[in-house]
Length: 127
Image (cartoon, rainbow, N blue to C red; front, side, top):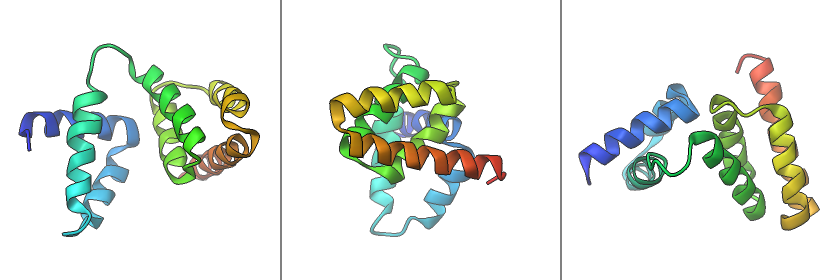
């Protein structure tokens, strides 16, 4: 493992997703899941999210559209929080899901919007 890339990835991961969430994920990791946590931190967050070619807002837009296409509500919820941390608005999130409805299918976009609404409700409740 590249320690520098891992540490840079950890910093970005915590900034986008929230330190509490990341630390909880790391505490929950066991012998089976720890290698995946390390891989995601080093390569996803340390190699890709730190590249200068796109800002974090743009990366959030892309992630939400791709996760909608893949119909991954758990990851959508996580990245809705990250997108809000990266400065996207609820209106911009709505536009991502509307655009995704046309190219990825209405059922996938509806699921994404439901997931986003759950996150909004949790955040409004202080969770």
